[in-house]
Length: 507
Image 1 (spheres, rainbow, N blue to C red):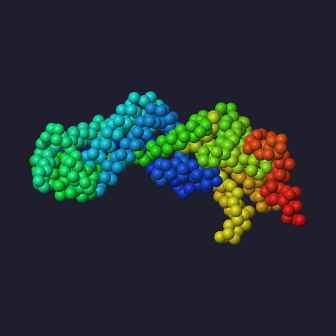
Image 2 (cartoon, rainbow, N blue to C red):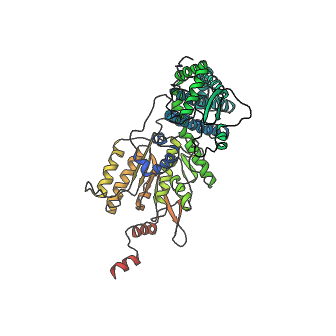
Image 3 (tube, rainbow, N blue to C red):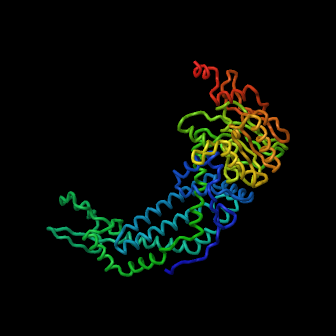
């Protein structure tokens, strides 16, 4: 068989172009939004290579739509099951490859190469048949199916046929081992009904004797008997073993770049779909985000996915929230008591935008999300021991590039900024920050203890973290004017200035 090289069409199931993309570092929002917790959990199950797939965010709206359509196809049960079966078969191929690397005899390596490549081509043959039966609607999956059919009809189909024929011939090879008075003789052929070699050993009291193995097995070294049997087989079947060796040599470099890339990229979709399956069994909902209508952005039953994943182990309740931005509304200013769910809600908004941009479903019952070119976050930081800078300076240094880059239309999340500044200064700086991002047609949320920021005009909406009648946190986030008492409670609790705490320190 000739060595196959056929040209393959460049293709990516993740990106519209075949150009490969890698994340340019890890953006700060991955840490701020607890997305690394989600990604690391996926990588733990699917391997570290899946991590980089979640760190690169599509640059265009068209690419987001391309991914969303592909994911829509993969969510079909038949397609998902076919791909999961395919992935499991690739794992079997890898096992065969590792086994073949352990053997020493050249003909053994040839056998395991044939088995490995045959299993690989068989996996793709089964996959393309399943995909051709499915109702695929995405450009990505339809195009991949056409590419794969072309490869199967040219190279892989012929290789599969050849490897299956060789394996069938191999299984038909037989020889007879005769044991008589401490003498062993080996001959070709079969003796019907005489049984297996291992059974003969037992009948002769051969306890503890290394059992005879098929000489094509993966034992790194062969026993003298096994090697003798193999030599006899080769000597008496020269044509077959010559064909076997030539075939193995010709197909050793069998992986095509377009398929290798598909294998690397498809786990992006499969890993997330598997995660959603597990989450749905626990009662969590996911939705396909839709383009917004009259309102610019909204969701029902939105929750923090990282917190929900943690809750699977802790059993802690996760409280979902509804929200909407009406036409002309740009920024939420969220106030309320400490530990009331403000930061969690802000993170859930950021996660909503992130998963929408990635072309995946979002953690909510329903959602309408516009396109945002980027996500920018600024969460409260601690003082730097290494630099000696105070907390306020650290915050300003991190905030400066966000405001200098003038990224229009981004989604911005700011959490507890300027908490160490004097109240008046914090109000002035906070208003300037809000005005800056609103002026760039950005949308977002500003979590703060300063109720005055909720009074900024021109696209700002006041949200409150709600308390119940006993002043206990409900983790519900609703529209409403900021309360002096709630903000005061926030500061008092934050700095441990309650009556009981002061009394304990003063007495």
